[in-house]
Image 1 (tube, rainbow, N blue to C red):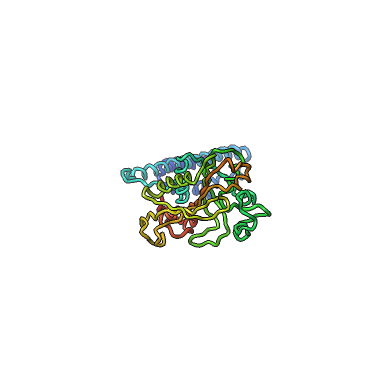
Image 2 (spheres, one colour):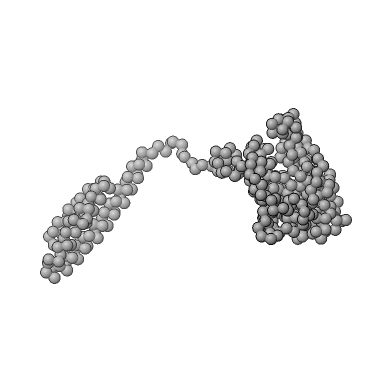
Amino acid sequence: MSRIDEIKAAFEAEISSCKRLEGLEEMKVRYLGRKGELTSVLRSLSELPEDERRKAGMEANKLKELMNSGIEEARTRLEMKSRGEKASEMDVTLPGFGPPRGGLHPITKTMGRISEIFVSLGFRIAEGPEVETEFYNFEALNIPLDHPSRDGFDTFYIKGKTLLRSHTSNVQIHIMQKQKPPFQVLMPGRVYRPDAVDATHSFMFHQVEGLMVDTDISFADLKGALTLFCRSMFGEDTRMRFRPSFFPFTEPSAEVDISCFICKGKGCRVCKMSGWLEIMGAGLVDPKVFEAVGYDPGKYTGFAFGMGVERIAMLLYGINDIRLFYENDVRFLRQFI
């Protein structure tokens, strides 16, 4: 018992004067380690008579608990003191280090700007499935069975007549099946085509298509909407031209070009010295599309247009390789924050 009292007195005196975390570990080993002073006492208890062994054992275990709690309290006190000293050494007048600032991807920014312009014209945003059937992706859009786009080399077929949509035009059919005119909808989203990846092609890219249907829609309405869009997107001095073209789902159809906003139509590397940039296809909705959704083509008319978002973004930001959008290179993306 006298030995237990001696160890207790020595421990209390030592821990009250301990000023280092390293010293606490040394104390723990010295008193409670495998060859520690209190450990030796506990091992020698078996040599005592039974009545003395019980009393000494209780006191030794109490001392062991006291040492463990005392060491933990001292560790907490010394750690708090250490943090306080480090804090006092900090110069709070120095500028801070904030987290890196993020931003929207250039494709997201471009799609958002396109949507914003058409929403201001009364269009509403609509989305549709990316996994589609041949009816919605081809048949209802007046694309015949022998059309090249329905070949397995031009479309990702999943199973049978199920496929990954090759354009967002499928959403037009879903919209027209569910509601009657008049309406104006804008349909942004991802599309998929098995193209070899190079500087201007990707197997996945983004499109934005628009559709307006009413009882008296003309090509003049289409030109008016697209003229306002192009001037809002590329500048007030932007000129447009419509070149006759062919799409199965529109008649008449046209390719839409704008004057090169980089060289102002004088000719440069971006416009290949032509002074013009192709940005989208458009036209009046073919009557056969209206028949496929149950509309009376003698009563309703409408226009549709579609553009590739990557194409618009590449023109806006002067990017010459579509692959840069998908490589997730922070050095490239940081330019658009």
